[in-house]
Length: 423
Ligand code: NAD
Image (cartoon, rainbow, N blue to C red):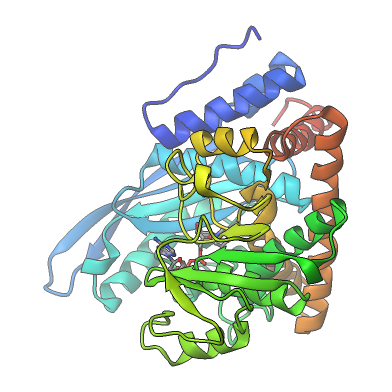
């Protein structure tokens, strides 16, 4: 490769660049395409002045990075966090390009945020900050330009403030600029369960690929939040035996199989939506989830959970990554030696971004789908994407993670080549 490789002091950006250069080298991608895709199209830094409740003015720093718009409008979340900076946004924007490409949806990648501590802000301060940020990034976001979504510390309420601000600036309702909106205001049915449903669909496709009937399979799920709970429920509904679930309060195990509907009822009635105090037939609380006797393990909680300390304990033959980055490179190497097959995060948890695409499509049409239509379309896309990566990995005799990266980058590179260099 004769292209000068970019490096970064920010760990996240440096890792994103290393993964990119590693994959394109193996793909023998054309140097000109490497040079184009190794850089972001646009990086915007804005000042966000906010009148605080005590009358003082505080100026926050905001960002929006568009890594690529080759395939379609940039897509990616907006986070409110003290660590947000331009490099972090660029790394996450690049990952969104590959995630959307692999998902087969018509988007490029973007990411943004405000460097702030939302826990110290009142609701009114957060609203004024959200509206000021939306006004600042208004010139570069749009239904056909860049479509942001929720991320760390943002949700439906922030999306409504963003959308309302830009709708007022434009003098017309603009539902297609932001996704992740509440169902009551241009949001979509089906979104809550979408990521977990997609994660479980990958698990079921994996079982099919290795010739196993889910009915004889034991499953463990780390994390019982949005992703983990719907993953567990979908696997149980497919006939698998969920023998362990966990959250921040501990790991709950039953060799007889856990009643997942009961676990849902439990968290619904818990003030903090936790499994604390959960009991079921044969249930015991155990130390940790990794060494549980399960065939299929879904880490759906934390980044870096399966690492050099924990990977050796894993008994499962298959892992489907529900969380973002739950297996570290060191953990991956140990799992590889043990012959464990890992379905990578940006394939497995792409149900979230595919759900965003569904919301956008419904907003464009001004016509809402039923939950059944939403789930059917999601399952169809997830199955197709799993097959694409599985077949690519088998044909090239490489791991699914590398195959996913290569397939995703190739799709973007092909479109860049097709469209040509002129902007
Ligand atoms: P969440 O906050 O709803 O749930 C997180 C769960 O993890 C909670 O049950 C929490 O108690 C549990 N947890 C925290 N620490 C734990 C520990 N040490 N051991 C066991 N469990 C622990 O979050 P979520 O939306 O379900 O997201 C989980 C992961 O999936 C994150 O990495 C997120 O980035 C990723 N993800 C989420 C979506 C989505 O649509 N929600 C989409 C793509 C990726």
